Length: 144
Image (cartoon, rainbow, N blue to C red; front, side):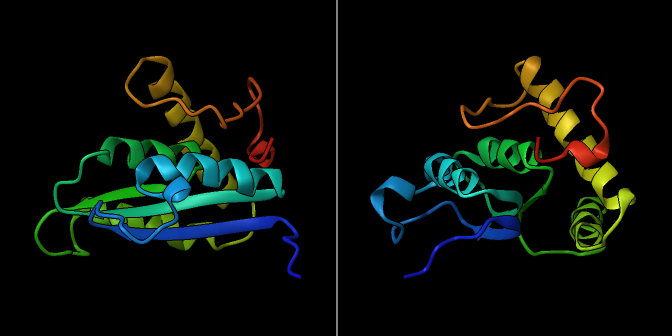
């Protein structure tokens, strides 16, 4: 049988918020919690890139999920326009995440710090599976 081996996962989700196909435990935006716990238990370093199409209940939670993992979030109303500042930032974050080196780690670290700051101020949802970065941690401390 297959046995997960851990490692880095960059996951892209494109959703309209209507999940009718996932197993019950993993259904919808709240299904991300058991999924994250399981992936982390298996040693995966997960980075979510989430595009939400239209007005979706739970969009703030998707945004927090992306931020907590150092990924990126993009709400798309109407058609996707890669020239908008938000789309350019999302695509640039995804492109840089695939690069090796300190620059990509630093940007991901900064996105996670921003999430931590927002969560501490009540502006982003907290997750039970989230493990905070060490105080003053370096970008290489991403999966700590």
